Amino acid sequence: MSRANPFAGLRMSVVTGICVRHDAISAATLATYRCLDSASTGNVRLYAGVVEFPGVRHRVTASPTDLLTDPHFLDSDIIVYHFGVRFDLFDALVLGNGKARQYVRYHNITPRDLVPEDAWQVIDRSLAQLDHLAHAAHVWCDSETNRRHLLELGHPPERSSVLALPVDLGPVTRDPIADRQGPVRIVFIGRMVASKGVLDLVHALGRVAERSSAPFRVFLAGNRNFSDPGFEAEVREAIAAGGLEDRIHWCGAIEDAEKHALLRRSDLLVIPSYHEGFCVPVVEAFGAGCFVVGYDSSNLPAISNGLARLVPTGDVEALAGALGNAIDAFAAGRSGAREPEVDCDDGARPLSAFRVDARAWAESFDFDHYRRRFLESLGALESEAKAP
Image (cartoon, helix red, strand yellow):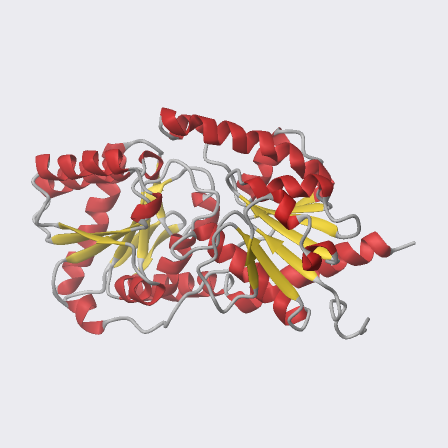
C-alpha cells in the first residue's frame, strides 16, 4: 500500500437504496463515491436498486442476496452504506462480506408524527433497521441533530461522529438587474409534504399581503416524485383561498443549474420546516447571496450559523412578521435610496456585509473541504483498526 495514498489498491463499495436526480441522499451518495473513486484510483462500485447516473460504475441490485454474491462486493476492503429510509440492501450490513470494514452515512429518519398515517409503516420499518448499526465500525452523521437521535437510541458515542454534507454552490455572481428592479423574490425549495411547512408559508404570505404594499413573488421548487399529491392539493386550495395565485409560481423539479440561477436572482429563501437533518438549501442560498427566513427546528439553527432570521417552529404569525420585515427591507432597497439591512439572528447588518459573511460560511461546505475531511476521517478509522 502506498504511503502517500493509504487507499491505493483497495476495493471499495458504496450501497444505497436508490441513486436518482433531485434527491438529497442520492447527492450525498455520489459525493461518497467521488471521494472514494479519487482515493482508490477507480476501484469503487455503487450498488442501488435504481441508478440514474450512467457515468458512475455501478450495478443495479435488487436484493441482499444479489449484493452478497457480487464478486466486487465480496472482495471489497471498505463498504459504505447511506441510510435515511429503509431499503432491502441495508440488510447486507448484518452479514457483510467477511473481510471489509463497514461504515454508515446516517441522514436521519423523519419523525412519525410529521408524516401521513399511510407512511407510518415505512417509518417504523426504517427505525427497526437502525438496529443494523451495531454491525457498523463507525457512523457518520450529517449533523449533531442526527447524531443525538442515534445516541438517544443507545448507539455508542465513540462509534459515531458528525461529518457535514458537501454543497455545490454554483457561481457567485448575482443578477444585478434582479437586485434593483421588480418585486421581491422569495424561493421555497423542498418536497410538497406537511413536514416542510408549506401550508404555514402560504398562510404567512397571506398575512404579509394584507399588511404590506410591497410587491413580492414566490417560487416553489421541489421534486414532485417524492411529494404528497393530496397535500399539494391542500396547498393549491390555500393559495386560491388567500388570493395568492398571481404571486406564487410552481417550478416543480429543477436542475442544479436552474436552481442556482433562481437563487442568484432571488432575495429570500424561506424554510418553514418542522424537521431538517441537515438542510442543503440553506447553504445554497447563502452561497448565492440570499437571506433566509425560517423556523428554528432541528438542525436549522446550526446550519444557518446565526445568519438567518429564525422564528419559533409552528408560529405562523412570527413567520409572517419575519417575512414581512425582510420583504419591506428589500423593497425599500429597490429605490436605491439606501442599502437594505437584514435582521440576522446574530445581529442586523447591511446586505453587502451579510453576503460576504454568508458566502464565507457556505464555502466551508464545498466539495474539496468535504473530500479532505471525509478521507481524513476514514483514514484515521482504518489506521486505528489496524493498529496492534
